[in-house]
Image: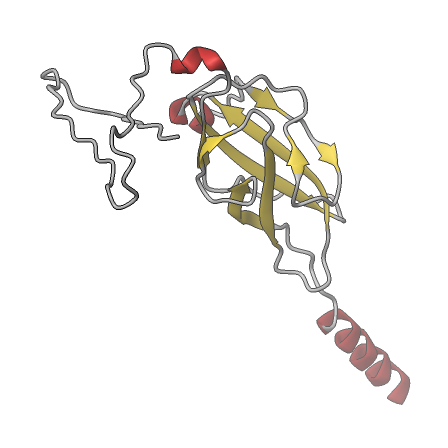
Length: 178
């Protein structure tokens, strides 16, 4: 009679100690070139994020990055600028956008998802964005250079300009200062 009781007790303790592996949570703290939502990046961008896995001692085994030209395309899961596909790698920082062609003075939207060592696929991160700067000399065409006429070190250069806007809402305005 003692043997079945001990067997049931051992089985119950073993079952209670079993940990069910949960998939990773969505990555957070998305960065481009170590900056959150940077403006004026070069064409050479690299991505970074923090993994969020509820399992102790878990590691990332793969990732996928989508980069889109609009927030709407990204929300639809379309990486029209770059889709890394599933990349088997533990890297979470300095991940290059290998081969993507970025345009000058453009806003891009991106997100990432990860897999854990057991193959559990996590959800997509919240979307993030970055904007490229002027990537070539073409962007400076038509620019008006501002300089002071005085050689006095105490004089400051100031620039003020009133701008007439059309009867349309402004969706984006960028001023480049060099």
